[in-house]
Amino acid sequence: MGFYLKLFWSFFKIGCFTFGGGYAMVPLIQKEIIDNRKWISANEFIDLLALAQSSPGPIAINTSVFVGYKIRGIPGSIVCILGTVLASFVIILLIAVYFSDFTKYPLVESAFKGMRPVVVVLIAAPVYTMSKGIEWRKIILAGAVAVVVGFLGMSPVYFLIAGAMGGII
Amino acid sequence: MIFVQIFWPFLKIGVFGFGGGYTMLSLIQNEVVENRNWISAQEFTDIVAISQMTPGPVAINSATYIGYNVSGSVWGSALATIAVCLPPLVIMILITKFYLAFRNNKYVGWVMDGLKPMLIGVIGAAAFMLMTPSNFPDIFSVVLFLATLTVSLLKVNPILIIIGGAVIGLIFL
Image (cartoon, rainbow over all chains, first blue to last red; front, side, top):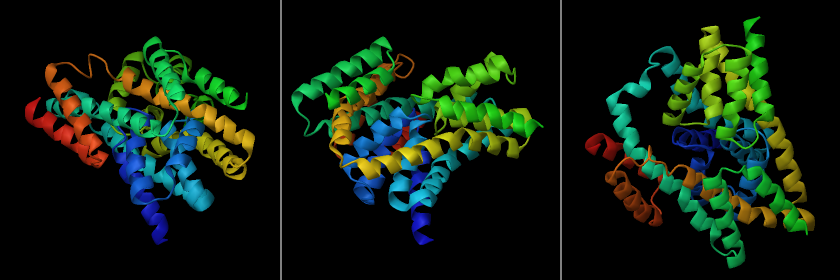
């Protein structure tokens, strides 16, 4: 039981701070699950992200399921999903019931003005850590993908399929 | 039976929601705004805005919110949230099982190697896509961006960095 509580607590903390889309979870997982707890390795984590991106559902949910399953099988994955979802569930429920005009409070707006640029950095930082030890040709490829997906709005799915096929050929 | 009616569209959204976050938005909009008229387009926009300001995936956030609005009860909210999580849970367990069994297979290894640079690019794109004028409205936000960049290289806990950003926003912005 103690271990499941630890698992739940780690993902609850991550769930509380996943602002700005699924990849905002990446730096939080790197810190908590890889560096602090050592539940999965940095290499497994890259594989996991590729799988999470290629299957349906939010990346944050898919990532939790993978880590939970890897550590403790099906019960582990259910505990992780609950941990990830609980914070956002409670917050949204409170907003739906009590303050649907939440975004219009000046204090909320100020806090978010400060958080937005910070979250962009946190999403960009793992790109650097994950690129370590990869040959330069692949880094150029990654850069090209980032530009095409980020600025031209192409779906990442095509690049993942191309990457998977390219790996075999 | 309102609860069955709530469960089904969110289950579908969970099954077909490839590509995470914002690609799921059009799916959600199609199901709950256009097909079922559960909420108006305006309300849907509000939900997206709220979702951007609260933690958690937008698909989960909108399920929780719409589930409550449609049924008027916490149970409707919980049911919609469970429905949207259930397909990814099952599918991802199968994928993880397969991965753990075959990751030492050379073909699976090659696929993973091919995926790696693509994935790094996709995450880089996620950062680029957030570099919008609404996220960086003034010079102060750029300064904050650069300051955070320095701090994050020092391996500070990202949770502290996010809280720091919020506190700075409350004090100065």
